[in-house]
Amino acid sequence: MIPTISGVFLTVSLMKISVVGGGYVGLVTAACFAELGHEVSIIDRGAAKVNAINAKKPPIYEEGLEELLQHHVGMRLRASTSYDSVPFSDLTFICVGTPPNPDGSADLSKMKAASRSIGSVLKNSSNYHVVVVKSTVPPGTTENIVVPTVLQKSGKSDDTIGFAMNPEFLREGRAIADFMHPDRIVIGSRNLRDGDRVAEAYKGISAPILSTGLPAAEMIKYASNAFLATKISFSNEMGNICKKLGIDVYEVMRGAGMDKRIGPYFLDAGAGFGGSCFPKDVHALIKLAETVGEDPILLRSVIDVNEKQPGRIVQLLKARIGDLKGKRIAVLGLAFKDNTDDIRESRSIPVIEELLKSGAVIAAYDPMANSSMQKIYPSLTYCSTAADALRGAEGCLVMTEWPEFKNIEKEFDLMANRLIIEGRRILSCKGAEGICW
Ligand SMILES: NC(=O)c1ccc[n+]([C@@H]2O[C@H](COP(=O)([O-])OP(=O)(O)OC[C@H]3O[C@@H](n4cnc5c(N)ncnc54)[C@H](O)[C@@H]3O)[C@@H](O)[C@H]2O)c1
Image (tube, rainbow, N blue to C red; front, side):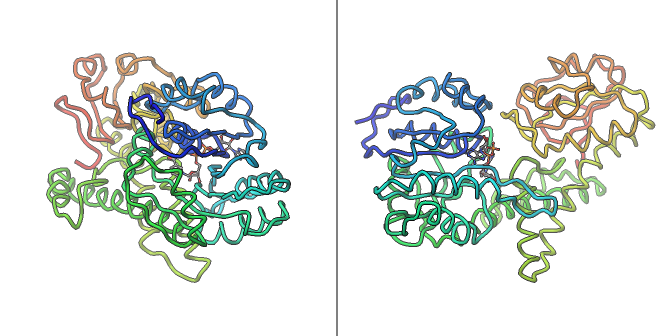
């Protein structure tokens, strides 16, 4: 019986698990497996990240993560820059980044490097071990890159080393809850033995397990992200049309979403989708389609709509206050979504670009992401409260759906000109205009 910090006693069989990559996915995966009772080693090439984890300080913000590190580091969880734990593990999850190449395709260099390192340390091991790809990778990557690289480097056959692909569907900001309560667990494998070994690690989590082949598991992740991105771009297009017609798109999509065939999620019109996944995965899928001679018309439109949305909010601002040169504009929200400090592909970035091009003076505020944005735009004025950003501003753009923005009311009176435009529908005060409502 294994106690968890939630006070629940688990009766799972203990496994030894290595997780390569201690970023958003790897660190959450590792902490949650430790919470499920397993003994987990994180391997990351970044010494600073490793030290932070071992000091029980999460290098990223994710609700509940610090608590899990406080509880498990030094007991069932540890981090290292070395791959030494791999030969003593039952499973190794690869959670390294797969960022976009300049042409939009997925850069698999980190996946290859991790596979080489895993293969090398498995050379002298005789235990049955399963290598699991958790990163988002194009179909065929596990079979054609990971399997041959690990087998070649280890000098073993696939009798002793198994392979699986287990895509991750967590959302940043709600990552731990998503990991512990997923809608489904997808496990792609070449045989039942490898897939069952991976399923064992998830014992204690109540969710249907879908067993597939390796490439189908890889494609499920792309199909899921592309579909969600499509829902957002569709809602934004509806919003752009509704705004011209004077119709509230939120009422419209609420009504549409009540249809079970459509569903209520991801129908919020606004400034578009950002983050490290949707834009990169849709681009990678477009590239993949092109390489097999398909013209992905719909996916291209999803990206087109998304890229135009941020420009619309600045156009609206200009339409309301004219030339922006020398005008102080408050930008509330820099993270790509609430509850995270991640600014990757945040829609506030193209907005800041446009504002700077127009000569605006930006006063920015985010509850968590000021320092992340400062690395890209060091010369903006970063404020420690929304009130400070709003003081003397001639316009305000709301770019992230932070719950604390909901209650901003009298702070808007600090503006030189009370002009508020929302890229996310979050405010409860009167008089704000929406990008597409
Ligand atoms: N972030 C998300 O919300 C999310 C959700 C689902 C799936 N994914 C996918 O998961 C993968 C990881 O995403 P992330 O956001 O965690 O990335 P990340 O950039 O936050 O983390 C990747 C980590 O891997 C480490 N790393 C890179 N190469 C390494 C190597 N050879 N050996 C050891 N460590 C190495 C890096 O130092 C970094 O800490 C990506 O494929 C992504 O598309 C991400």
